[in-house]
Structures are given as structure tokens and as C-alpha cells.
Amino acid sequence: MKTLIIIVAILSTGLMAGIFFTWTNAVKPGIGTLDDMTYMKAFQAMNRLILNPLFYIVFILPVLTISISTYMSFGSTKLYVFELFLLSTLLYVLGVFLITILGNIPLNELLENTDLEKISLTELSDLRGKIENKWNNFNLIRTVSSFISFLLLVICLFFIKN
Image (cartoon, rainbow, N blue to C red; front, side, top):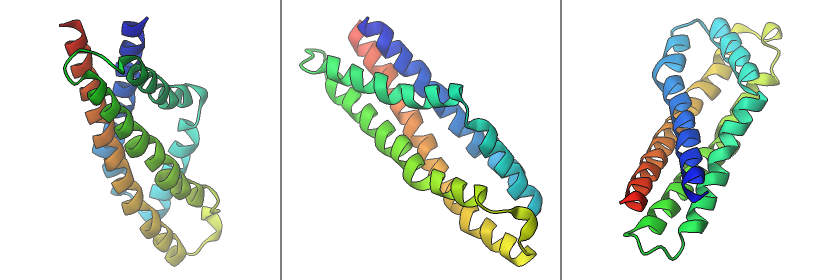
């Protein structure tokens, strides 16, 4: 059971790292080349579509499985296993979960609550200026945090199995 939980933690964290990496590496730079209206409409459409049950499960699953793995490793005689699980948990909870809730989601909501067809070109440009760089920076934090969390989980599994 313990190994299964760790494997689920690794897979779900890896999936999230991959999603964030794809957004950081391809999606945002790609739509970043678009004019303001096209960029904002594309971003708005993607934000709406990503909010689905499967995404929620994969997003929340690492919080649960890494935390459970950390708890189960408390008192482990294996070198640094508990500490590595704890660091992985902190990275995911602070660098992914909280950054999403406190950083990305408010920016997504600002965009979602704006009727793009009813604002001027200046307002549209200002809105993009308020959202784009902040959102990209938050996403970079999520990308790095989830990748390091994933890497730490893989290291933990290696230590546990050897």
C-alpha cells in the first residue's frame, strides 16, 4: 500500500509538472505572440476548458498522496526519506497549490469576469499587462516547484527500495 501511494504521488506530481512545463514552454509563449484580443480570448477559452473533474483530481491528488507518504515515512530508518518527503510536500503545497490559489486563480478570475467585447483597446492592453507577466511568473514557480517535488519523490522511492 505504501509503495502504491508513493507511485500515485510520483505519477500525479509528474503529470502536473508536465502540464505546467507545457504551459511555460509552449502554450504561453505561443499565444504570447498574438494580438491583445486574440491572446485574451484564447487564454480565456483555455482557462474555461482546463477546469474539469479530471484536472481537479490530478491537481489535488499530489497534495493528498505526498502528504500521506510524508506521514507514513515519519520515523523511517532510511537516510533522509522523511525529510525528502517533507520537502516534496512543502514544495507542492506552497509552490504549486498555494501559488495557484493565491496567484493564478485571481488573475484567471479577473480575465473571466471581463467582457472582452465591451472594453476599449486601451483597456484590453492594460488588462493583458496586468495578467500576462504575473501569470507567467506564477506558472514558472509552479513548474519548478512541481518538477523538484517530483524529483524528490523519485529519489525517496529509490531510497526506500534500496
